[in-house]
Length: 225
Length: 225
Image (cartoon, rainbow over all chains, first blue to last red):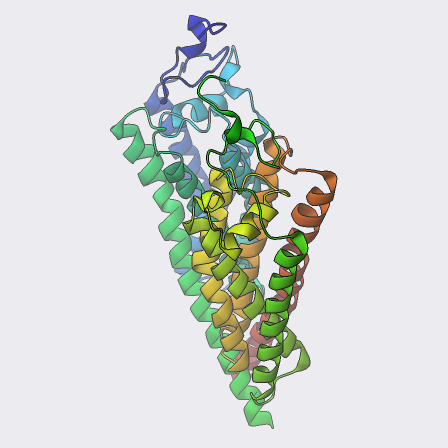
């Protein structure tokens, strides 16, 4: 390992031979990092819930969905957008909160700190295209646009596709990117699972709604003839 | 390069330092490989066109779309399915036609012969999920199912997402996987472009159709009240 000095391999990530020149250790605690994300998310949900209530004829399910879309949209744009466009986040001498988030998450999947190209591609599409589309989905639900269910299906399928590429590439490369079983299950499995089962439920719900509308429209056409 | 004998690096792909132990050179000519794929595809299109004509009230556009869905579905399942589940295709002593296809295509993108994990992940999703869904889409068009446009949007968006991951990962890794400019533009750019502009047109068309149906259904509801 000539040319690699000791400082380059001192980091908490797996695989151990991952080379991270100028890596700056995490300063914030896990509880601070998760606490800020959790509190900010709760604030967003609270704000969207209040705002959604001001629109006419909004069902409880629609209000919950609006909260989800704004929460996931902001996560995509702010958290994931930061990751995509800040390749050197792990080198910051005075790390920002978002840099700390990605160093912490990399304990569950070191491909983030290692800048794996499949991860960057998926996160790039998610941050740039799906993030803004999520906010549009919340707006479409509130204002009862005709494309509301269609847009929700399109984004949810994109989230499912991205998560599939994310898990499959890790599996193909040996599935050995977590610092411990704890981080593997907590960060990599459980946290990502929300972007599997929630989009799945949304696709099923909106799929049924659109099919019902199309069927009703066809029957109307047949009657008119 | 101890332990690497000369035979391991003799192949027509770029980068030159890609190690392919037991690589067996291409036997079939480019015209044979493309000719067989082209002829088989024309046969499929001809057969589907005749079959589609036997369904009642099928427009010309629907017949063209049915041909496209069966063609792309069979390409996904047979060609791409073979690639995904035959990791050692380039080592076959008596290579099958499909092995020759992928050795030839690898001149445009050596990540295929090099088993890049992002390429395998995208091709795996395409072959296993999207391939059969394409055949279902052709059936749904023929039998005028209420989910027809929705399914077409879902598959087309998946094809667009896959192509995006495919191009972005290549770009992030230096975009240096083609044996020459000829193969880069012919195989990598032009051939893949069909899976960009055709799915895009399908998404736009089906999106409009569904929105129109949903709007008509909403107006009907309002009138009934």
